[in-house]
Image (tube, rainbow, N blue to C red; front, side):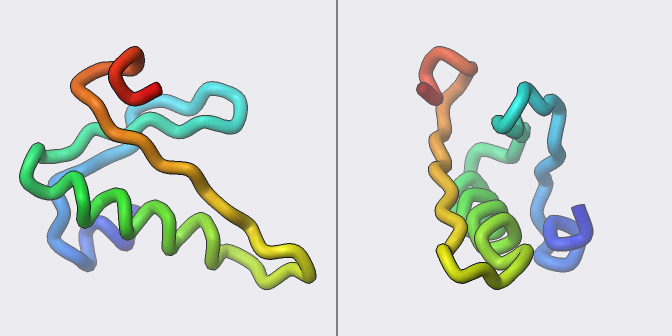
Amino acid sequence: CERFSRDGLDAWMVLQVHDELVFEAARGQVPDVIQAVREEMEGVRRLAVPIRVDVHAGENWAEAH
């Protein structure tokens, strides 16, 4: 992701399952990665109804849900 590189974040997308994206990130950078993902996804296009993104974090898929 260009945003991760630009912001110096050690993170990458590892999986997409339907409408969910799974990222791995350095533990100390999780809040910054969450902010970047939310901003990029919610700002991808201006619509009459705003796009809202839920972001969760955890050590594994089960913890993140």
